Image (cartoon, rainbow, N blue to C red; front, top):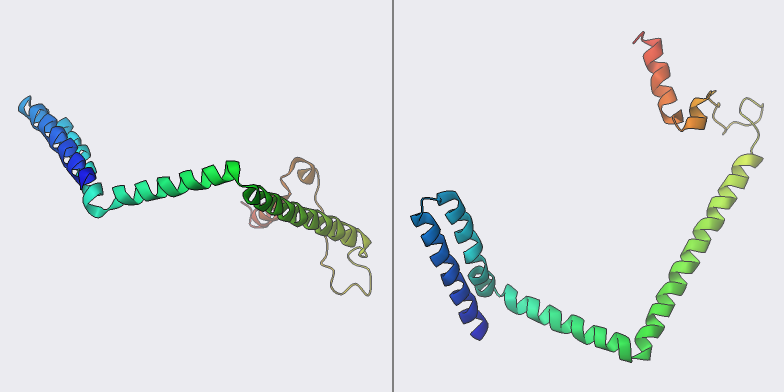
Amino acid sequence: MLTTTLCAVLSAVGLAVAFRTAYRSRYLRATRIAALALLPLGLALAGLVTLARRIGTAFGDWAADLVFDPTVWLGFAVLACSALLYGITRLIAARASVRKGAAQPPAGVPGASTARPAVQRGADSEIGLSDFADVEEILRRRGI
């Protein structure tokens, strides 16, 4: 109740400032002030001020528990361990795929049916432009 009253008073003051600005023939600025002045009342009537207060209170309680409760610290340690294990498995998988790629027979060797023929790339691959080599070749074929 007090929050809604305070927001209504704040909106009324803002609208008074908007009317005073409009009296000075600054209509665009007065409209902007009126739009901003109506925000507190709209937020209070929609219940969003109360929601924000509850969220702030819950966050404050959680922060207090974070500092004083050892189980919260244990929870963060478990989360860190989980992230570390996930990262390690990603690194191992990446290294395994690199080694597997080096162990495959080169393209064009009989019996390597799954291997795709390699496209010769010149100095573009050193610069990082290898993605555009296919596009350049297509454009070159079409005479563009």
